Length: 172
Image (cartoon, rainbow, N blue to C red; front, top):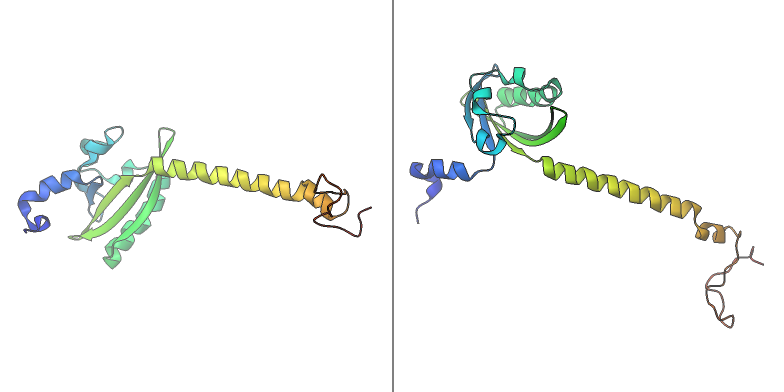
């Protein structure tokens, strides 16, 4: 069977199945090529916004601070790097998984919107933290603590013919 990944007639079709967006950026930050941007991000990025423009002037400063050191590292060491990036646009925070690869003296930036996944992760972390705090409060201030320090007496069975499961010398 033929390996379709090595057959150029399938290249365009294969690229259309990829969920990632791709931007080719030169050493000065100028966007030289764009792929798949409008198909997945028509809500805020278009090819016209990027092609031929300096991307460092288009992205928020906080995002620039996250991605530029990685960009320079890829150019300097010719090694692929990946990083999750946070970007605030029009009051909404978006999260992207970025993979930067050296390509012909430039950097190929592949990115995928992972906003929904990150929002679910953040919400789960908040819920886990809240549950942890509730658990701490229950352990610290619960009746069991009072029982252990002898502030209350306990008879664990309704039938007094059974011994208590635990006793304390401080119990009456």
